[in-house]
Length: 226
Image (spheres, rainbow, N blue to C red):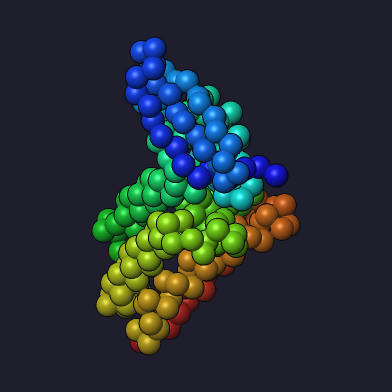
């Protein structure tokens, strides 16, 4: 059984080096020597490693050892910058959420008609086997942790708002039926994409998601304009 980290202290001066004092839940004590410059540089590398590995394996499929090996950081660096794996994951997911929100704004944006902007979202190149950088966490028990769920929720809510705004514009221009609720339609489109990722992974067919999004476009095009 791996001992859970309970407390850490940064000890700044012992023979001109930094030390991390680690105490686990079993009161095991370890003093880890680390170079100050390496510790400072390691934070970004740890976040980068978390973003990469958790997209590939999910939160629960990545261990602290995996993160250290991928980042090349020392154990002292991890404990200096973060309380543990969950704290690091929260920071990493926050960055991913920011990146994906920015991409959604650029994609759905204001350039073109409302329906064109919705179609741009559906036309984004996606590899179904890789899964969504945010959506893949939804089925993990870790989603119950507020610090992990909040950045994921923030992305999906902003995406839904962007799509709903484009859909309302499409309705105003007579491109799609006004009787449809724009917020609910936006939610359906997000669900098509996320469900497409799931089916692609189950079928081991990276193109299944693209078939789903093309069908969604086909369903939108002939909607009665009234």
